[in-house]
Length: 255
Ligand SMILES: [Zn+2]
Figure (tube, rainbow, N blue to C red):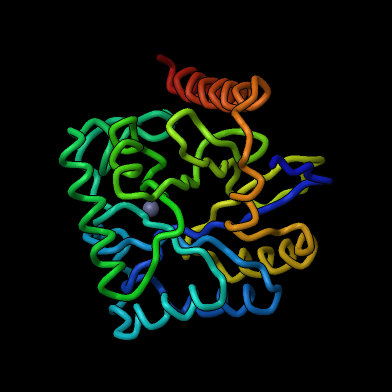
C-alpha cells in the first residue's frame, strides 16, 4: 500500500568504502553517524582495484567493521565489483562517461555482480542495494541485478522512491551536499575524503535535519508507486543544468 509522506525525508549515502580508504577521515565520520543516529547507506567496493581508492594501508578488520555497521541497521550497498572503469559509457543516467558495467554484455555484467556478491556472502555481509560506480549502469545491469535478486537501486532522479516495470525499486540520489527541501525523498552522497571543515558541516547538517533522516529500509517502503511525470521532470532539470554547465565550459574555453 502506498504511504503518504509528510514533509521531506533524507538519506545519507557514503561511497567508496573499502579497506584502503582513509581511516583517519572515516573514524570521525562514523562517530558523527553514531552520535546523530543517522543510518547511512554505505557503498562498499567488494574487491577494490582502483588506485584512487588506495589512500592508506588496508584495514585488516575491514569486514568485521562492515558486519558491525550492518548489525547497527546501516545499509550496505554493492558498489560495483572492483571499481575499475572499463568503458566510456555513461549508462542510463548519462552522468559520467565511465563505467565498470554499462556497455558490457549481460553475461559479463552478471559475472561481475555475482563475484561481488560472493565476496559479500563469504564475509557474512548482505547487499541491501545496488550503488553503481560513477552512477553508470544500463539495462543489462538491471537484468543481471534482477537475476541475482538485488532489486533495490540507490540512484536516479525522482521526488520519491518508486518501482519500475522490471520490479526494481529505485531510491533516488539527487545531491552531494545535505540541503533543506520543501518535500520529497532526497539522498545526499558523500565520499570518505571530507576535510575537517566538511566534517564539521556534515555534523551540523545531520543535527539540523536529523529527525527527517530515514533508513534505506524506510525509503524502500515508500517506493510502492510508479514513477510519475513529475519525477521525469527532475531528471530533465538535472540534464538541463548539466548541459548548461558544459556549455559554459565550452564558452569559457572559446570553442
Ligand atoms: Zn565510487
